[in-house]
Image 1 (tube, one colour):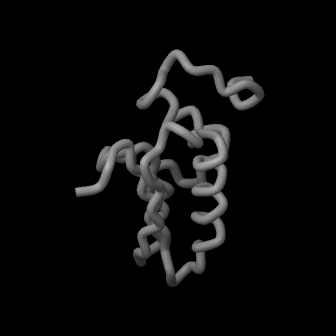
Image 2: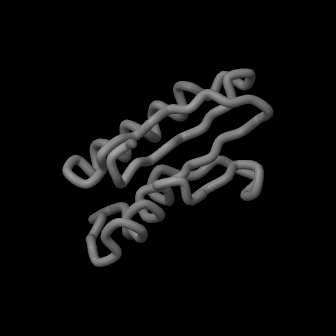
Image 3: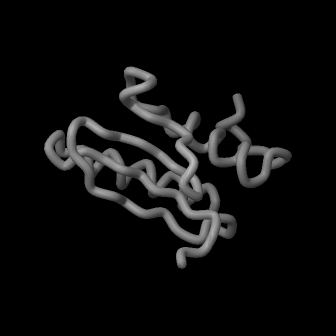
Amino acid sequence: MPRSPRVEIEYCTQCRWLLRAAWVAQELLTTFVDDLAEVALVPGTGGVFDIRLDGELLFSRKDAGRFPEAKEVKQLVRDKIDPARSLGHSDR
């Protein structure tokens, strides 16, 4: 069983969004060095780019009609794991 909190970034292999997913993963791992147990890159198809925290959908490219900004993803994750935490410049 995976440790918590666990972030999954499901990306479309057909669309070649691996680098985008890896970049978001890097941003999260850099920001939440001691807070995340894992960030997993999950291959998918059909234009998917979803971000989940412990199975809960935080962001869906299809639902939003766009990709998330790094700042937005950091805020979504922070709001779930440590709402009182300041993200510095990412909170502006």
